[in-house]
Image (cartoon, rainbow, N blue to C red; front, side, top):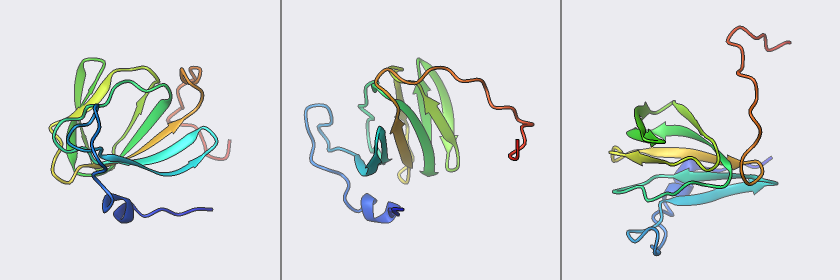
Length: 126
């Protein structure tokens, strides 16, 4: 088992900038296992991310933001989870000053195969 602290990793941000993120990088890997990588993402200003090769799961830890996925905008807040298939265009816009999300990248390049939608009425004992 491994435990990571959101507070500890937020204290390390931003990381030095590069060509893609001139104002600094606002993501940091906290742990990895196999194809899975857990990151903290706390963008400030403009979210410059481009589509990723793996499927992603975002879990909003704090704050609010707009989220644009394939041209459609929705609003997200602490406690929300978002799934983004590999290769899809997406970004956060208009983030609050306290916006932070956990990001889980997983699976093979190109994403995993479609799965049936979970049933709202499925039993955990099934």
